[in-house]
Amino acid sequence: MIIRVLGTGCPKCKKTYENVKKAVEELGIDAEIQKVEDIDEISQWVMLTPGVVFDDVVVFEGKIPTVEEIKRELMDYLKGN
Image (tube, rainbow, N blue to C red; front, side):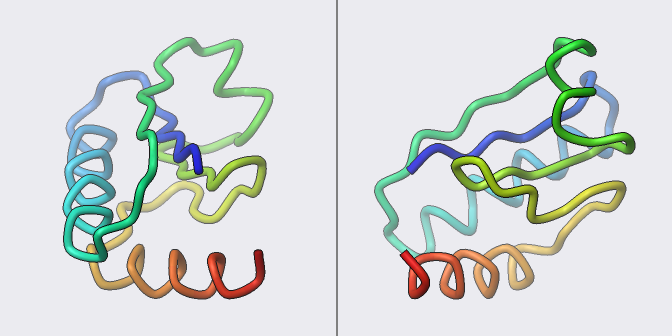
């Protein structure tokens, strides 16, 4: 599984990355977490940052998701795949 954290490096984007990392660690999921900071690539996924993408599915856009929100979405996503 690939998780992309989309953002240009602002504090909100950095916090989102940390929350994603913590959620993955707490759940013990085997996932590659990528920081995407290129504005052209970000704009292919979302209009507002920060954004979080599981594989090819945009899960969060324009907000800092909490660790618990990320864990809940990860569990739902993994159940569906």
